[in-house]
Length: 251
Image (tube, rainbow, N blue to C red; front, side, top):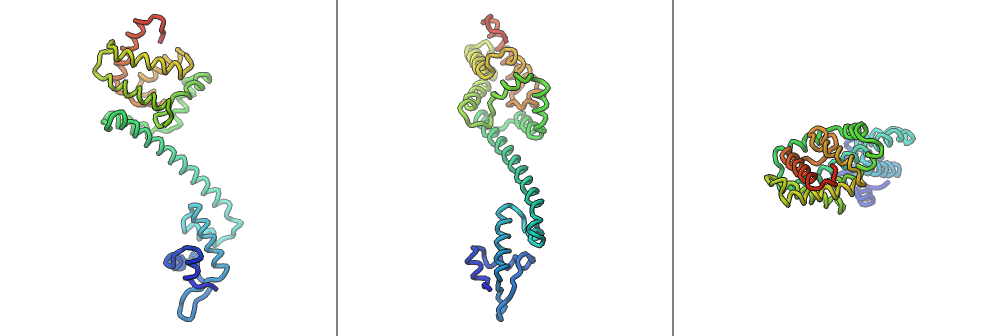
């Protein structure tokens, strides 16, 4: 038999925790000294090791007690259930990570969360992810779906994503500018150049994506980075001017 202090040292679990386990019936000592101090048998130590293992796998104490009061052979359903919960949590955390990176990108671009942009982010955050998949499947051909996989994510940290973030910053800086200005036309040229590279020169797909971008509802379904209607209108006029001045380019 091993005294509670020795068991605490051996397992690096505090005496207070062992006493708590006793109080909730999770780990009862097999004996006590004449002075009333808890003594643990070998099977008690084995049970404690099982408690430590199950806790490390994320099981709560109530679930641990239920498992230990049953047979070890009956643990498999608990493990399957816990594995499912862990996978769900991982998906949730990955989603949260993506959202945090997107918010970080917005602060880089805006320096603040404007009401209109904040509303768009709330709408996107509440949108069922399956809607994007359904929209893409319905709207694009298999070849087009392969190409649009190259669209960078604003939660990405790679060089290409950073280039697109920089481009969006330049687009937002066009607010109030003349769409025929040299600055606006340079931005349009960059958009065309980067989009052509991204989509392998598929001008028809470029036009389809631009029509989707002009639709607030379809932009949400595609989970495209929010742009104000005024910015979309300015770009649309800038594209028209660019096309008129460069007949070889077809949107």
